[in-house]
Figure 1 (cartoon, rainbow over the protein chains, first blue to last red):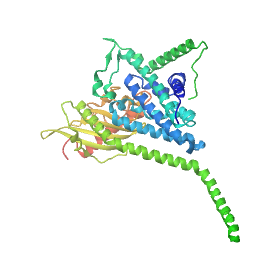
Figure 2 (figure 1 turned 90 degrees about the horizontal axis):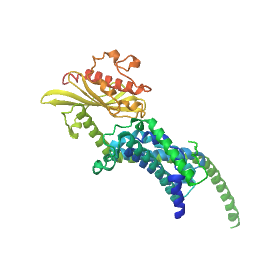
Figure 3 (figure 1 turned 180 degrees about the horizontal axis):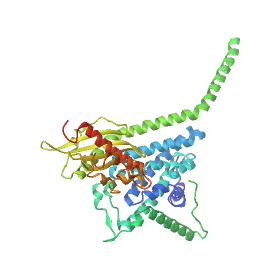
Figure 4 (figure 1 turned 45 degrees about the vertical axis):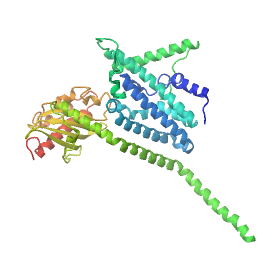
Length: 226
Length: 224
């Protein structure tokens, strides 16, 4: 059951970069774009998504011999929906202010096809430790993209960063807020849905540019079926 | 000894045949059984977490309710203990439930009525709101406490997202008139949002029904 370091490394590289669910798969765009209005909300949803994906991957991999392939999709959905509901309850109790804001998007984690896709493509076919690793890295891959998007939109939109950090990390974090530009007028578009699309587009362009420069062979974003 | 030895394979064969037949039938039922088991385990797990988190969530909700009261009537600060004294008003119309009122007094005189209620006519389930009313029946203010409406569309009923909910301030059963207690699309006095009519309609109706229910109880004017 032990995982070789190189396997782990390649899983990490796939989840965080080369098969990143948000940047390459372009999956789960609805929560990615809607919740990334600031860093704290983005981080909260990223962590929730990672937790759900990690737990569901492990459970599905553990139970895969007991899952008849004919009904595997409904069974995946039951496991996913249970995990999401539990995450919803825990967040409602632990971080009520943030849950007030992003709570509407928590049930949408179920419909994040990045998660169902990974469970079907990976956890259903691999052993438990590999599936747990894959779930973790895919979740982290989603998390860093949504956090980067959230931070960029927050900086552009308000001129500050880490606002409302106390809602996630407690009172000690109330002075974490950075004001990067004093008397910043605010670039409203960055906070609106249009800004989310524009910034994600720029991020994808940046990723393609990096990939093209790294390998001489051109590599473009491949749209996967969602 | 002889017949016994010959009889037992026969008997075994029969049993084995029966077993394999049973097994085949079980095999075809397996997916259904699996779905039952998964659903049952999922339900048990989620219920467990529901009951584990409920006390904390209720405490947060009470805090939010008190915060809302403070926002509507700034000079009033209540403790969570006061919420235990809220009086249940039995439902009247099917769309409205969970109506609970609290009489704010200054000495002996009634200063305001603070209440919470839930309408079930939202686009995606219940909308819980709080409201403060003067003794003369005029609304001090309404705030939405909890809802599951569409993000970016129906969530405009939240005071942090738009000023829509402030339109109730100063309104009463007499103003606007009964026929105008609705959204503009239905000939009423309240705005709806582009693309979302059901959500504001539910809130307007919920507030209206609450006022009517209170009047029927004689709450806003005098003590029962």
